[in-house]
Length: 69
Image (cartoon, rainbow, N blue to C red; front, side, top):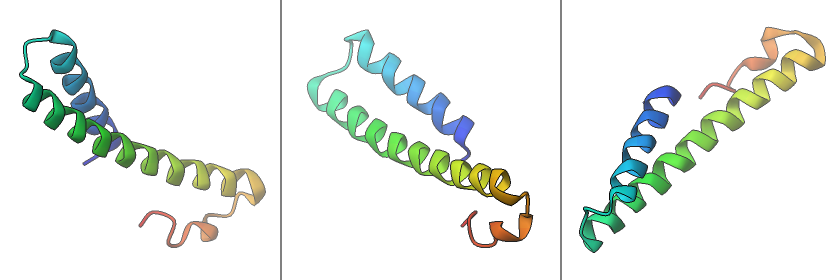
């Protein structure tokens, strides 16, 4: 899942939790899904930050080998 898609899914989860219409069990499941998505987004942001740091250091794209995966 792409970062933008993950953020949109997180927004839906937050809306579902904030609505107050979900049962406790449903809310807990949504919360767990939100935590997982949040961690995935953080990982994607960390990888992007590493890329930016490499670019700022020397501008060489060769240093990106393996950073994407």
